[in-house]
Structures are given as C-alpha cells and as structure tokens.
Image (cartoon, rainbow, N blue to C red):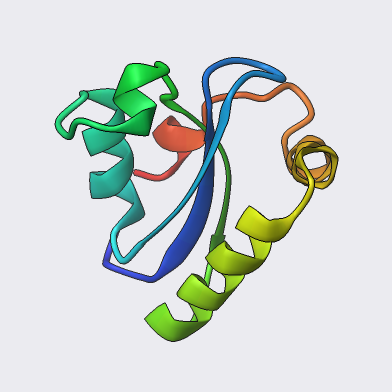
Length: 96
C-alpha cells in the first residue's frame, strides 16, 4: 500500500478504549501500534485493533478530520465504527 494520509480509530476490544490518530502510512503506523514500538497511550492501554479508518486527499485534511473526531462524543464515534464495522473486526489484515 502506498502512502496516503488517513485518520484511524483503534480499539482495545469491542466497545473498549478508543484511540483516534492520523498518519501518512496506515499500514506502517498500525503495525507500530500493534507491535508496541512506541511508548504511549496505545501501549499502556493495549489499544491495537484497527476498527475504522478514512483516507484523505491531503495531510492537512487528515489532521482537520482527526481534530474533528477527537472533539466528538464517544457515542458518535462508536456509532460511526458500528456503521462501517459492526463486529469491530481488526481491519489491519484488509490493508495489504
């Protein structure tokens, strides 16, 4: 997969802890989370399941969307995830 700006949501489990992030390389960044390469929130709370993502045309748009989602209520994020991924499957394998 070539690099493309994306906003993504990771979860610890279905209806678990959520993490909203932005990246220019979704495959590489998700792998970093899964493999606990970087210290931080996702490592501390075991948040490794890619449950939602959205590609953007530019990094500026991706950052804007990330900020928007971080401002949302949890309920809205859960509803968005469940519309696209009702079983909260790990979408990482679908990226390759």
